[in-house]
Image (cartoon, rainbow, N blue to C red; front, top):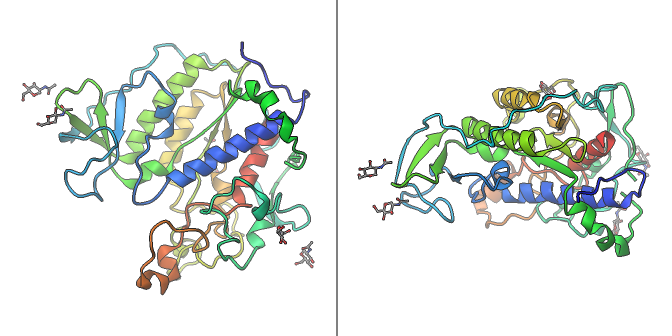
Length: 358
Ligand SMILES: *[C@@H]1O[C@H](CO)[C@@H](O)[C@H](O)[C@H]1NC(C)=O
Ligand SMILES: *[C@@H]1O[C@H](CO)[C@@H](O)[C@H](O)[C@H]1NC(C)=O
Ligand SMILES: *[C@@H]1O[C@H](CO)[C@@H](O)[C@H](O)[C@H]1NC(C)=O
Ligand SMILES: *[C@@H]1O[C@H](CO)[C@@H](O)[C@H](O)[C@H]1NC(C)=O
Ligand SMILES: *[C@@H]1O[C@H](CO)[C@@H](O)[C@H](O)[C@H]1NC(C)=O
């Protein structure tokens, strides 16, 4: 029997859930590496009925290399237009979720607030990843930790992340193992170029090839079918976090410059800034898919507010798993990570927005 989480019961399960979400985000970002991605994309991960294997695009790999831990393509042809088998139930359209209608919490600006931020001390967080611990890895300017997201027409409910009862973790495990709250997100994985699809019934090992956005759409529609068929909005809250932007070309916010996020110390001031790291056609596709699910899925539309945070990425201040070559070291921008986010930092605010909508 599914237990419904209630805000009044206690604050602790929420903390656990937020922690899990934080870990999911962190793991998601850890899995993302520009050169090597071996994992299946998220939506497919959650579907047992799925009859398709996504195979990493092989543009960067030598011929005949195994592209996925389990499968390889014997040949490739164009995508046939086939859809992932649906559970064949129609989407019931109910009223759109209203939590966010009173105020668009995703429209606002970043305000320097060193009284309430950071929400925690980087070195005290036991789950900190070396990819995100920017201060530990030498980032000298800590300004990125002190920004509060201020929606234009309201204030966010404050998250109280500070009272922890370690002995209660297991007591509440039965509530979160049934996942009353699910947060999905997928994007960057698809931006690496063509994706190969290996349908399970394909006896000759021939893959179909599809561009990244098309493959993301295919996976998102399968995910949408799953949500439509399986999610009872009275028992589960489902969120979808929109794409997390990258800041790979400083010329987009500072015309004439040739860098990236390296050495950026403050958020963008230009409202409604939109860079190439947030692909608009992808955004519209996501709008379409989520539009069909509006009674079941709340959107965490974090793209625009994260777009402003060119200062929030680790750049060179993280652990790099590969050894850096001297020519890279002599040109820091060349190996800066402008994709992940430092913590404490921008993803904490995504969590605050999630908390606000719960
Ligand atoms: C907050 O920032 C202001 C202005 O930079 C500074 O004067 C003040 O000392 C800072 N306070 C804290 C607690 O860091
Ligand atoms: C974080 O904790 C460390 C170790 O306890 C301490 O040295 C440091 O000053 C703290 N940082 C902040 C910003 O409070
Ligand atoms: C698999 O290959 C065999 C032999 O080349 C061919 O006859 C058959 O039609 C192929 N099957 C599919 C599904 O393409
Ligand atoms: C791919 O081709 C090899 C050799 O032709 C064959 O042994 C293998 O079974 C094929 N794989 C699939 C999945 O059909
Ligand atoms: C998210 O916000 C952007 C504007 O910042 C908007 O264009 C887009 O349609 C929104 N996406 C969803 C899924 O609500």
